[in-house]
Image 1: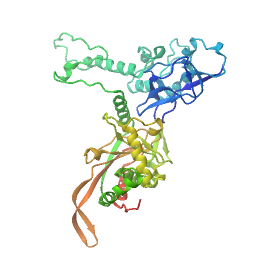
Image 2 (image 1 turned 60 degrees about the horizontal axis):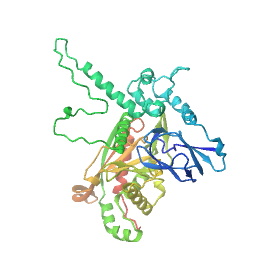
Image 3 (image 1 turned 135 degrees about the horizontal axis):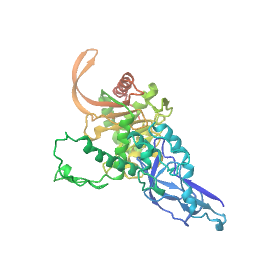
Image 4 (image 1 turned 90 degrees about the horizontal axis):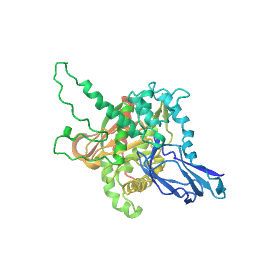
Amino acid sequence: MALEDLVMPKLGESIMEATILKWLKQVGDAVEMDETVLEIATDKVDSEVPSTASGIIEAILFNENDVVPIGTVIARIRTEGAASETIAPEPAPARQPEPVVTEPAQEAEVVSSTIKPAATGSASARFYSPLVLNIAASEGISMSELEQIPGTGKEGRVTKNDILEYVANRSRQQAPAATVTPPAVTVAPAKETPQSGTLDISRHGGNVEIIEMDRMRKLIAEHMVRSKQTSPHVTSFSEADVTNMVMWREKVKKDFEKREGTKITFMPLFIEAITRCIKRFPLINSSIDGDKIIIKKDINIGMATALPSGNLIVPVIKNADQLNLTGLAKRVNGLADAARNNKLKAEDTQGGTFTITNVGTFGSLAGTPIINQPQVAILAVGAIKKRPVVVETPQGDSIAIRHMMVLSMSYDHRVVDGALGATFLSAVAKELESFVPVEI
């Protein structure tokens, strides 16, 4: 019988898993090539998974809200013309996770020395995703202890939520032992321990409001914490006189919008300066794989964008160095609009090699941004403010009112030393200061 496997697609080099939000097709439904079968979510963007063949949905192997590793078979499609009497029996879905066991098993060997594979012939032989193994390693949970954690996933698998809940409960149980005072102290009556998943409101005072994080905020939080745990962050600061740039934009913005149908903001100007400097300092445009530094030849600039919900997303401008100012302006505005209207595609947030965030949009003079993994640097631009500054001229120094902006860049000290980080940031500032008005 001709069966086509539908697998969880690769959604970016840093994305290891995705959550199934909704199945749009059910077993027995007809589906066309490229027709959407389900909706998924990652820590970057929600996306749709299209069918890779025309036919009938033969089997659905995971439920909604399941977290599934990339590359895992999630459904099977019986292609048109296949013999209907040879429909796969029910036990088949239970065997499907087998193809993905080898990849996580190999991953587990390098995650941490505290996580050892189960002995051959073990009666348990449970499957653990790379994320679960990473959390276990970071929390010092041995494989034998991991085997005892109840799983709520498919076939009793331990999900991310299961292991995080276990870690939280273990911390609460260990806390009293850590705070025990000398034996002479009278033991007070024990309080009831809050049940798993509940919140002890008494710890926060009486007049409080409890807000549950939405899914995206939880993913952002995890991504930021993981970045801090992964990269030793260093932040350098510089200042740029962007008066020429401000005056030029003020002069051309109306004609530009009328002619091109889109606004000219400062972001394309910043990106243009950054791409020029990256070509001079290519190590800034890299990532780390073990003890290897991967220098990226393509310059794909991520642009942190605030959403109406208050969350943040980073659409990517691919090959930014190959676009002129008009092309950059249209790409920047198009991605920003798509982000705010929840119309970004999965590929719109993939492949970034360097990120810029505009903290000045909200009035901040400067910020200390967190690196967007697996990149090694992120640059923040602050608010442009008029200030009196000393201007050096051949005729002597003078004080003038100039448009000034603070730049800050956080970088991974494993790759970027202070000298390189400060030099690159100063180069970007000089590019902005030496802006030459152009006809567009």
